[in-house]
Length: 151
Image 1 (cartoon, rainbow, N blue to C red):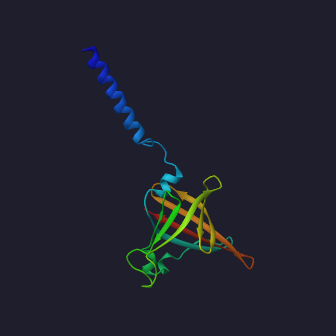
Image 2: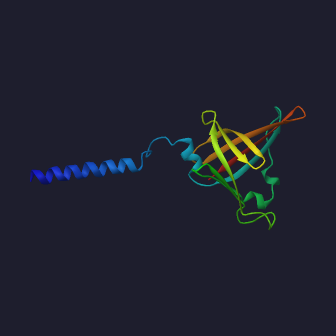
Image 3: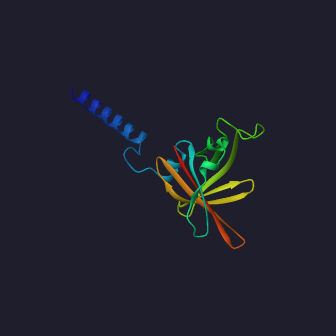
């Protein structure tokens, strides 16, 4: 009887440790990487501004073929941008890939495209929303763009 009790105790301890190890984040905070790479992101706001002027949401003016696109930050540091159901031009590729990485203590996402590296300042990143902004200076004027995505 004692052997059975010891074996059952060992079995339950082993089973409990396997459950706790398989989902180490159950109930705990998720890392930024986990939140970013969990599933695709769909654009819901496209805002622009110059210098210290207010943000203007220009999403409504985007073509429907752009509005159905989605972006997927993969755990392998590959960003896949998918054209969605409708392409703006039939000759456009269905997907475009780039590489991405976190920078500056996970406060920025660096996206490397064929044209160069884009520095994106993370404004919000949680289970349901991603928002980041970029800025460029041209002729002494800073032009900002903010992208807000949902799942």
